[in-house]
Amino acid sequence: MASITNAVTAKTLGDASNIREDLGDVIYNVSPFQTPFTSGIATSSVTADNHEWLTDTLAAAATNEHVEADTSITAATSTRTRKTNNVQISQKSVIVTQKAEFFDRAGIPGKEMAYQLVKVGKELQMDIELSALSNFTAKRAATSSTAGRSASVASWIGTASNQSVGAGSGAKNGASTGATGPTDGDDRNLTDTIMEGVLDGIWENSGDFSNTKIMADATRVASIRDKLTGIANDVNSDAKTGEIYNRVAVYVSQYGPLAIIPNKHMPANTIYVLNMDTWGLGVAGGKKIHTTDIATTTSAEQKLLQTYYSLEARSEEANGAVYDIN
Image (cartoon, rainbow, N blue to C red):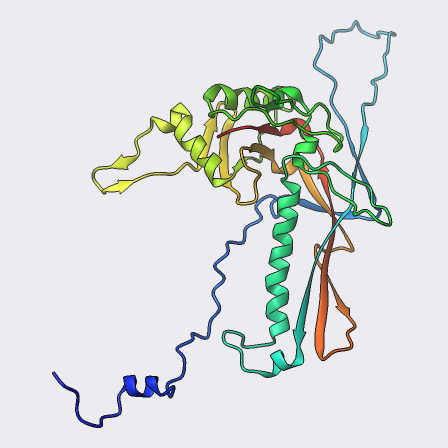
């Protein structure tokens, strides 16, 4: 079927570059933004490069019986421990020219600088999350030529029974000082024995599962779903509704239910069991991100985003780690 002769069509206009581009006026951020660890823990104030806090422990329960008016009084001993971590600076900058601000930009109803600050601020928070969860990043004091570093989660979990590592060269972290960490071993499949052993260790050393979550990347969450017998053998479909279930959201242990939180910033081959009440993120200046105007001699606006932070491990005994998991 032929078109009407000399009709003005969309095709002829398009061939002559007379039709405007079909560009939507919304920018869609395709990258996920979640920081479940650092967003879920307390925030405190940092006032020095060497950030310090105190921990204490209760004496073990013992037989305690005395006669009336007993004169053999023994004073309780203090077990307070001072712990330290260093302040880490993470930063990103944004530069926007005046010309870029003058033009009509798709998807930006306001200033380009405002959009870029929001975007880069999210990226900076993801950097902090990645650093805090690193498998082993030891603390490091800042010098005139060396950046300070905040020790990561694995540097603080030091109770042996709260950790599981693979065979071979694998070694558990031996101290909760922020200066040491675990050593990689042979990768293995997750088993009920491994997971239950770490949970037993946390219970024996802290007895606290009040706000404890299991955190892992997508592959290790799949290991929890597929390898632990209680989950793997469960019904995974409903014939009545036609629904198929391929998920795991809660691990119900003998100490209570533990939410499973997928985290794209978790180190590979690692599962953390984290009591969120026992961690803190110390930040300097009263807020997580500071914005500074930077002078420039060109026709551009430049801003620097910085965060000064230090991770606090307030009770490492309430946390555990499973390393070297396929």
